[in-house]
View 1 (cartoon, helix red, strand yellow):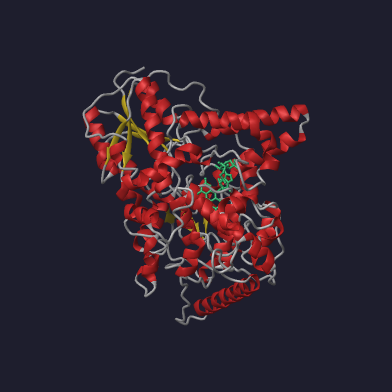
View 2 (cartoon, rainbow, N blue to C red):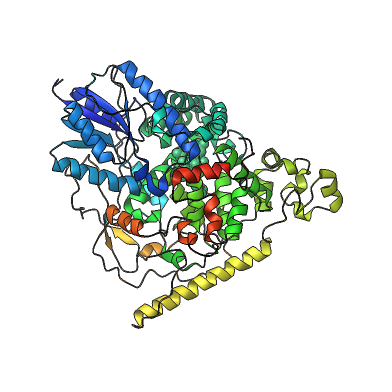
Amino acid sequence: MDGETRTIVWFRRDLRIEDNPALAAAARDGSVFPVYIWCPKEEGQFFPGRVSRWWLKNSLAQLEKSLTSLGAPLAFIKTQDTFTALLECVKAVGATKVVFNHLYDPVSLVRDHEIKQKLAEVAIPVRSYNGDLLYEPWEVYDEKGHAFTTFDAYWQKCMSLPMEPVAQFPPWHLVSATGTIQSCSVEELGLEHESEKSSNALLGRGWSPGWSSADKALSDFIELHLHEYSKSRLKVGGNSTSLLSPYLHFGELSIRKVFQCVQLKHILYVKEENILGKESANLYLKAIGFREYSRYLCFNFPFTLEQPLLRNLKFFPWNPNMDRFKAWRQGRTGYPLVDAGMRELWATGWLHNRIRVIVSSFCVKYLLLPWRWGMKYFWDTLLDADLESDILGWQYISGSLPDGHELDRLDNPEIQGAKYDPEGEYVRQWLPELARMPSNWIHHPWNAPLTVLQSAGVELGLNYPKPIIEIDEARESLTKAIFTMWERESSARAGSTNGTSEEVHDNSENFELPIPTVILSVKAAGSTASSRDQRVPSFQPVKNNPISRKRSKNIYDEEAIPGKLPNHNKAGPSKEDEEDSWTAESSYKKQATSSSFSVPHSWMSSSTGNLLQDCEHSDPVQASEELNATDQCPSKMGE
Ligand SMILES: Cc1cc2nc3c(=O)[nH]c(=O)nc-3n(C[C@H](O)[C@H](O)[C@H](O)COP(=O)(O)OP(=O)(O)OC[C@H]3O[C@@H](n4cnc5c(N)ncnc54)[C@H](O)[C@@H]3O)c2cc1C
């Protein structure tokens, strides 16, 4: 061990000791200075919501204790600028190196890339590692060097590649590199506001953040529940899945470890000819694959943060109706399964994947609300809020992925209720006003005879709303919207090919981008030479990209209801992008100059815009406080 090497270990969303490559490398080299830097300003519109910050705070507290017991306490810094804070640490400690583990969301990609460049300018060696994925997103391409745009092909390729094993032993002792910096306590980071504490206290009853709880949750799941996963994951109530997503989001659990533990079980099940176990393990590994894929898409198509992967939605006539958005958020749409989901989300910060699909589809297909609005609301309220998985989920349901739901697929919440909550237990749990409704009417109380409603104490329009929109009307509006989208798309194409200046403007996207093809061999300026090191994406846009033409089978749904509309030629963009290449950085800069993603800001200035102020804000802290305080949101639901 070279005693002269003093390394700053910059923790972010890798809050664990075990199988943490950056920490392990630093510990091998010499003394370490672990630091967590909290810079609310840099979080921008992706400032984490209340429950997510609660989780982070508790997880950091546990990590601090663990690192202290290993010999190198974790320093906390609250700052206005991450690079400046890192540089201060380097100077104070006399550090010879900075290390960290990769993140792949578009905002982190840009920030990390800039920090690397700036550290290089002041001659500080910096090294980054894969601590969050089975496969780096720049390792998986097709034979032509193009990025995959369908999950099955991507995952098949992944499964043919070798995987790095879990590091055998976590460091058992750390040599601390000392230095005096302006640090603070985890409490002083300000992750939890006074006003939030009483609501958050309840979260502690159901969840236990931190790497040691993550380890326990994993072993419990594998020993007790994995075997039944293929059956139980279809139940929407209760703990029917692994509930590991918040741990995985904050890197409290190594994904390699999860994968290898499940794979071992799979081998065992195969040996035992245990069909259910085998199917369950396979499905679970595939679920992990979706998480990998979400990072893969965000890295290779960083614009998906604000624009759908398929360009078709660019011309979709969204209905930015604030009242509808509010009714959806509050769980007052009149559709019990949707409302139960939205109340559970608000009360607990948690939703089963099936319910996420149902409520998000309702938001987009019934209410015609822009998908990014829903995505931002999920981001603000989910305990496992994860930018990449959130983007993948919302694009999946809104017809934006080649292998996602079709845009014209309209699921009926009444039928879904009968299928996923046959006894109505889930609805009764979250909608006490419907608690006495008999099971055969609970998912469609509007059809129930008056006598049934009366004996259940339900007064539609008074203590439970009538449907915000009738199913037939929703189907008609969606069909009309899709035709309008096609018309707009055709006239835009005609306008751009005949040389006229006629333009059709989308009402939610502020700029347009053709879907680029990722070319493996093109390297972004400034990307580092090491193959283990972080890359930044680089694209070459092409004409008529095939992504928008084909639609494969759905990636994570059991069944697909055949589309009601005739096939439409979803031709790719005819207008060539003028830029030669795209990087995450350029995407981010565009985002910075555009208000397109930020749900409220595009509408704040309009006459109806201020209606959104109750749940969306330019000041994220204030926004989250208002979100909690507002009497318009169902804040009484369980918190
Ligand atoms: C509209 C929408 C938004 C979503 N937003 C998020 C989000 O913000 N954060 C988040 O972690 N997941 C999100 N998901 C994915 C999925 O719903 C959750 O990962 C899953 O429900 C978490 O529960 P679990 O850990 O018990 O999952 P399990 O079924 O036990 O799966 C194990 C792990 O696999 C991963 N996984 C499973 N399904 C998916 C998926 N469809 N996409 C990506 N990863 C998956 C998760 O890391 C999960 O912890 C979203 C899905 C949809 C449809």
